[in-house]
Picture 1: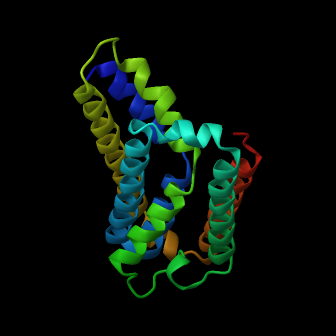
Picture 2: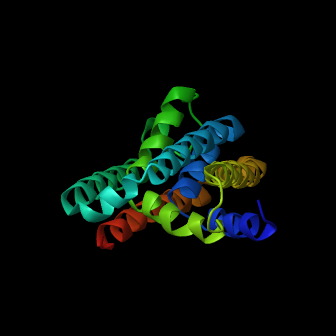
Amino acid sequence: MSVEYLLTAFIICLSPGIGVVYTLSSTLGGGLRAGFWAAAGCTIATVLHLLVAMAGLAAVLHTSAVLFQAIKFAGVAYLLWMAWAILKDRGGLSVRPSEPVPAGTLLRRGILLNILNPKLPLFFVAFIPQFVPLGSPAGLLVELGLGFTAMTFIVFMGYAAVAATGRERVLQSERAMTWLRRVFAASFAALGLKLAGDTA
């Protein structure tokens, strides 16, 4: 696994997206523990997408407009629901401290948020082959996939650690809490609308 591949994967994972926003909001609402399970859920979804890409199912998504659109708009609906719930400061989706959300719930939300993005397997099909020399063994694909997965979890946990460090200070400011709700809600809504506007 080359340094170039790891650096590229790091930059991609570092770019704010659905997983980053979900991990940050979960950490602010439930602390580092919640951030860990949110990051784990997003990482599991990444593994599933990698498996789909390596199995060639990304090609099916690319050629089946109906299937692609169905998955895409299910993801859009879920993102918009997340935006509305956070804006309204509801229960487990609140960025305020509350009763601990079960690990299974945090995992499930993280998986759903990322698994309903049909662009991911297409991305992996386009990205990973750039680092696979012609005639390489299939094991190299697995190695690169595992490297990307590990990088995803490390970066997301880095975001969670940063959020947990400043959590208490943020939670003590009502103004900061109001703006955080708006920012996270707007982020989820923007990501949903971007996904809706993407073409297959």
